[in-house]
Image (cartoon, rainbow, N blue to C red; front, side, top):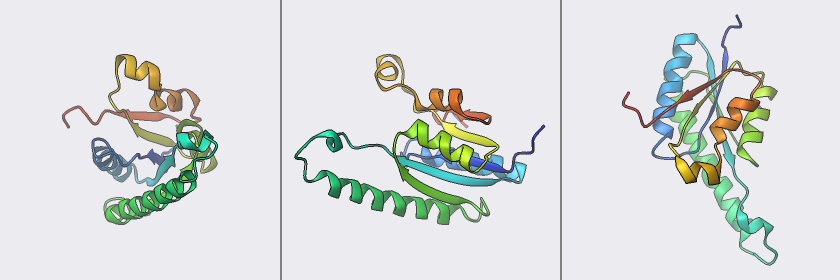
Length: 149
């Protein structure tokens, strides 16, 4: 059995899920003696596909700056609980980027949270968690932040 030393934790900075996910991932990492790599993907902005949307580039830049600030704060706030943790922000399709990053750093585990989408919402939006689970090279631990801890 492979020892778990590197854990990828995709975060979306959602108030509903991020705090619970980070706390849980830090707990698991501490117990395993592993290092966490927080990871955030900025999804393509729909206006990027539209011709003549001059504000799209500025919007993308603003989102990148804000996401990097949030990631820096997340890493800084969790350095004590998660020694050696890192954070990275990239742009692209979430599933593709999460799976690529996990493989690139040769992660041993991905800890990801659900968003609680059900029914039509899940059908229309798909499930990042489900696709990561199907495509990842390593085990995926799915955490439900909506259950009582």
